[in-house]
Length: 161
Image 1 (cartoon, rainbow, N blue to C red):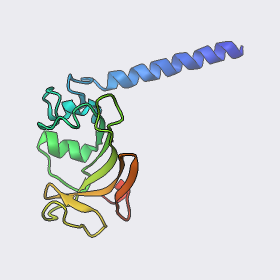
Image 2 (cartoon, helix red, strand yellow):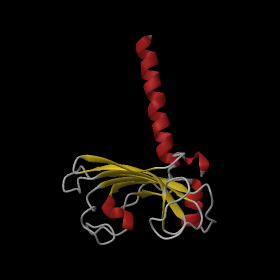
Image 3 (cartoon, rainbow, N blue to C red):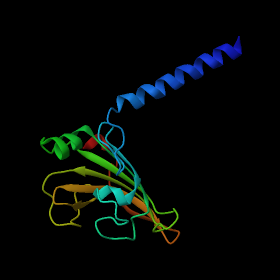
Image 4 (cartoon, rainbow, N blue to C red):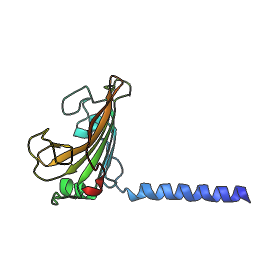
């Protein structure tokens, strides 16, 4: 009896996993993007949609593994002509501890905040401005096996954005 229950649970888990794959209708493209699931997974080389061994022309980070996830607000504004607003945020998980990688590992949280100035301008929560309207409000990583807390704004969760 226990064996039958275990098998039934495994079947349910497989069906549930299959359903989530079907939900992401388009699946992953050759670059690593799955726009239906709002995620990028793959070598950083693909993030610029140009598989040339570089990231925007820089070969240092091309082999690094990257996972990006973005909110519906980010998706609507970035890819569907919507208005940028408080619900627009994303995360980046960089892993350069791969063959040929940079050796660096970084985690970033970025959110739309409205006009915030030149790149690097401090934001009121303790983050810093990038791209003119976005704040990096959480960033830490390792370089040469040394850990750095670059930014830990208060609060550091997406609930405020």
